[in-house]
Image (cartoon, rainbow, N blue to C red; front, top):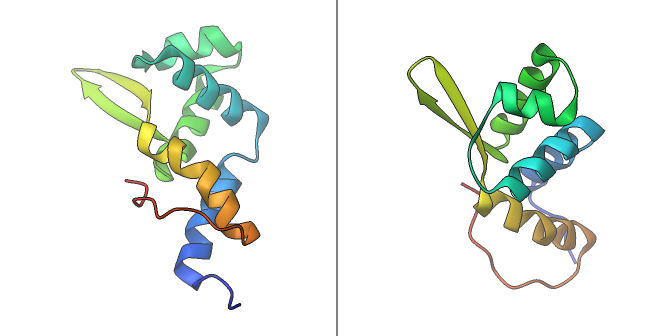
Length: 107
C-alpha cells in the first residue's frame, strides 16, 4: 500500500491543525449546532473569549473552509460549512488507511 499523495496529506494536515485548539473546536461546535449564521459578537458571548481572539480563530477556520463568511454591510456573519464538516470523519479514516466510500472534496 502506498502513502497518500502529498497534496491530499497537506490538505488533511491543515484540517487537523485547524482543529488542534480547544477554542476552535468550541466555535465549530457552536456554529454546527446553531445552524444559522452568527456575528462575531454572538460567538464571543457564547464562548466567553475576547473578540480579537475569536476573530483570529474564525480566520483560521475560514482558511480551511470549516467556516464560511458572509459579508452584510459592515457585519460579517459566520456559519459552518456543512460540506467540510461532513468530510472530516472520512479524512480521518483515509489517513488511518481505513476503506471509505468516495466523497466529494471539501469546498
